[in-house]
Length: 59
Image (cartoon, rainbow, N blue to C red; front, side, top):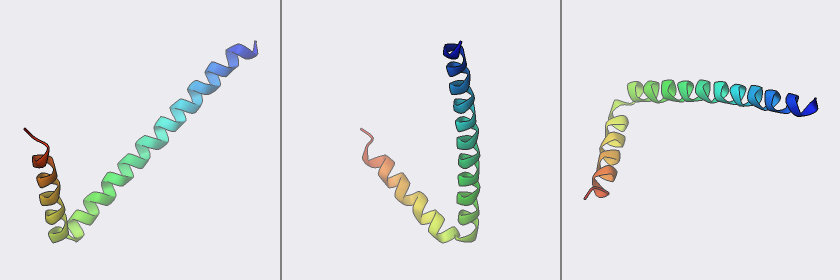
């Protein structure tokens, strides 16, 4: 019977890990949005740099 408990425990751990990761990503996006609002010039410059990076790899 211990073989049946292992997948359940693993599934519960995986579910918890996904929940924590989703929470982390939500908070990360909130922090980025706040930083963009607080420092609009820096955010615009970062967007421009990212756009240049993306353009560099297009054919």
